[in-house]
Length: 246
Ligand SMILES: C[S@@+](CC[C@H](N)C(=O)[O-])C[C@H]1O[C@@H](n2cnc3c(N)ncnc32)[C@H](O)[C@@H]1O
Image (tube, rainbow, N blue to C red; front, side):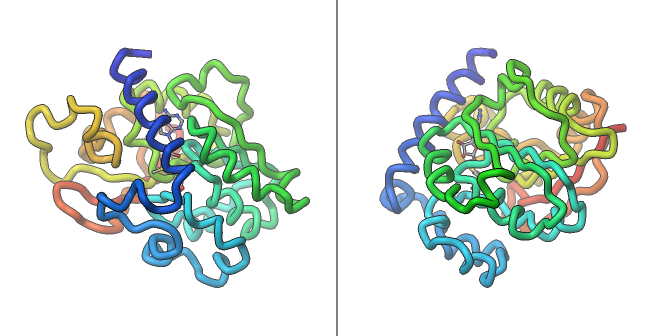
């Protein structure tokens, strides 16, 4: 792993572990919604959220509601990279009757523990596997092929995106899909902005333009099926990006 990636990884792990320990304080200085307010704003179905314990929401930091797209894709196996406290995994289990297995990987042991505490429901314990790993080092693990790889807010936190795409391509079934929710650049960032680790922590410093994103995917034998703008907040747009193998 290059030195910038290692430093970024370490800083993010510390930050998300700290977040897992506090209910609201850490994010107060940053004007970012969290908990049920954030999930409702992103369009997660309220009736579904009400079926989960209220503490499930406090440590969810999704970039978007991926559920409609995931239902449409109807995968039997899912790998959620940067799953955090695993809210999307729990909701997928409820919504996808054909689902055979869903794996969640995150670098934050604190967030994963929050998720594991909710694994008491018998049907979820058999379908969900959560484990701690660094997304920069996925090639160290013997992971199963899956129908869908989900990254809801974690893609822009990875420095070497071409290498990440190469790893993802190797984990995808032939007709599999990669579904990414993150920011794409609508304008150039100020010179030097992306050299600062702090600017990466909330997913902006690591944002690519649509053209750069497409080049990184192509280099790994992948092709973009669609990019949908969910919200434009110049210099970025919050996007849903669907990718397949060429
Ligand atoms: C914006 S949060 C999204 C969390 C989750 N997808 C959700 O919807 O709540 C980004 C997540 O990526 C994880 N992450 C960041 N860098 C990572 C890395 N190098 N390896 C593994 N996980 C990482 C963080 O720990 C955090 O849980």
